Image (cartoon, rainbow, N blue to C red; front, side, top):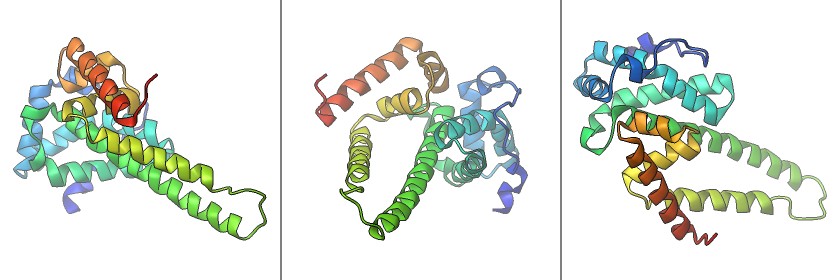
Length: 206
């Protein structure tokens, strides 16, 4: 944790620094990530400076709460530092790999918060008289969320990464292409094919 002390400042959503794409391309970011995997703290500091605004922006979109978003963003970079040896440049861009971690961490935080609220609600309902099963709807919603999560796991890594950025991260197709370091047409194809497979897995016909 001492190694992360220098990375304690999370940028606000109004950060005006240049985006990672303007400051450094996918190849350079991959190089910094690989150097970080070798324990190079200065490389990781540079990587943080180039990507922290983008990571925090994605976390904020999912988590919403500013304070929690800052906490999650820090957890993301701790995870990146600890697991950067797992990055494989042949499977995608460094930024996409980092944003995937950010998205999953954010979703985990939201699910944790929802579960906590669910326990509070269940306790409250258990202690008052109700005319219907007030927990049934939330149970169905959780099951649906689990089905979607399982369905996403059936996609290829490329399809899943593109879909998570486009539909869960809220990025445009052009932004997804830039973050993945692929042509716009390739990004659109991954998103389209991923959606088709996702619909088939979930049994959606319309």
